[in-house]
Length: 621
Image 1 (tube, rainbow, N blue to C red):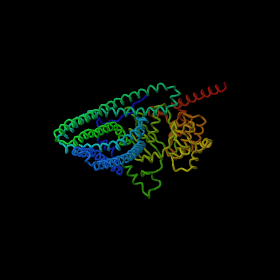
Image 2 (cartoon, rainbow, N blue to C red):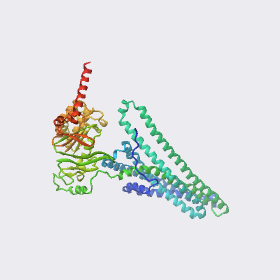
Image 3 (cartoon, rainbow, N blue to C red):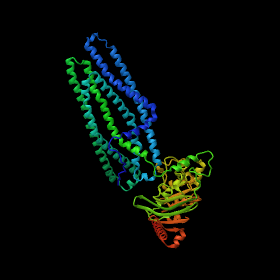
Image 4 (spheres, one colour):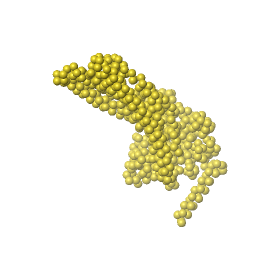
């Protein structure tokens, strides 16, 4: 049951261009980058200075009797360098921490904004948990790498350069011998780079799948318990967890081999310094202090190289996160305002604009919605709608009925512009819907779904969600219009009662009434009900039916109905089969025709009668 989320295509090696794009998110914080860079360079200078102070001290002691040497100047210099190092480390930690937090905040904000702009089709193959991992762990990982890893590399490169220059200046031949181990180190890094990158990407993939599994199981907890699926779900999760364990161990083993190789090469360099430098000391061509400095540098030289190697490993691991985050940020919504609409939106924003003109420059009122020879398919070669034609005028209510999978929800999704036709056009007031502003059009939609979703907060806040500037009186008037006011006032705190996460403190019928009030308060010109009464009791349905007159009046309304008795008053009832209209008319006309609708209605009526008789019989018994 667990589907692997859709993967994007990524590069198979360290992508410096990608990291350049990530680093752009740090550029707005030059006030932190500047002290961070200064601190990194300053720390490198201080680290390299300790060996030189030691060299001068050892040479001074070796040339004179210990009691005749004044060590205070050397101790003072050492103390000053140590103090400067402490100040540099403080600057580094303070600036890096600030940069990491700011970048994480900005990237997360950009990702959240992008997710809200993307069309429904983007989420069809990307589970919620998969996307959550991008907004949380991926964003944090990128911010940490840029703030700490990249600047660690700057420190390391500076220190390596300073040490290499100092060693070559002090003793050219010995310095070049120590540096001879660098080419093998570069080769080892190149060999491990691809292995670490691929295993890190696999680790991130399974981590995202586990996050998606957590989210899915928590959302379906009631279903799991009611069907006693705990053991099977545990087995499915164990498969994911085992796969995650395997790739994590592989990545850890690769890192465990790579880092010791680097340390071994450092030890070889120190051995070369001791072997060759010791011989030079014995021959008198090299001072003891210089030998001590070389041994010190040989060991220290590979500390920054080791840091570069570790940062490279981290960057290879984080590149998968970077690819995911940047691919999300670079995703262009398939459904968006084209350039001409954007120009009109900019021109509209002026003080003398007419009140009856919409933000895109056309008329504000929606008088009609027309499907003009519309084709649509979710996947190529699998058509859902073919040559579909329909015109709905303001004030009309269109009911859509038919078997599941016939295309009813697709029709209303296209009418809402959650998807766009793959052929033909949808017109608003005779003008192509793609020529209208997406934000303006969606602001004129009111949608109530079969599974109503409420947000954490009070009843009042949930009703006001569709129009934040609404007054308390307007909120309560909307609730009265859909017959929700009485049950709301009966709650513990009335309109200020907390609904709980997802509205779990209210019944399904109560949540549905609140969602109707929310839709009505937004005063939409197009209203859509997608089987909104199929999962509620008859009493609540009657309350909703009484309130629907207020919602439908003067609006274009689409109703997908499970219970056919609820749509008898619709202006037109369309029977949809395989993406086509097979019957159209009022309830009376379709019943007289004795076609598909008549069969559906009479069969459902008989079933309801049988259920009622059984209920009465059970009660009587």
